[in-house]
Image (cartoon, each protein chain N blue to C red):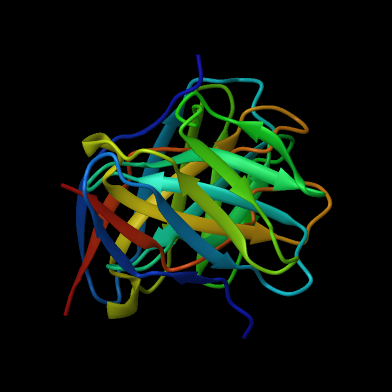
Length: 113
Length: 115
């Protein structure tokens, strides 16, 4: 069945360091994988997506890596800032043409000043 | 920057009462969604809506739930007879993308507390 889960519920990183947030998924037929950021009291905010036929995609200070062999997704945030403190969710679109996002349980990232 | 706006920000209701949560999508967006998040848990899909009809719904979205876009702007979620377990944050999300790549624009949510 569909499931998306995270390895760690919390992660603390020193300001300025790089952070890596990991996610495992089980549905090998998923079409897109997405990372969202949710700050306290706010709705999820899109960060970056990656299609299943890619293994790496870069954005501004973020990189998403997809390893389909082990069904693993990661989000790397470079030079973390206090504003990066949030809960990070990975999500997937289970199959082409599907409307829904299936979210994982989230990792709370805390940036230590 | 355009944003999705939701009202009310917080609603407290008695079990069995009807509630309507409202969303104003980003103006040129055509695809609308409701998600919910029970406190401390993950975000769950409820329903997607396009061209004035439901395109997909989850098992959570039973007969007690309905959606509509009554005036062409507001997108509403109605819970006919609330239960304690309906207490959650409800997020409206929209996109203008023809193909769903997962980039949705979420509102700030409506917190529903059922007593």
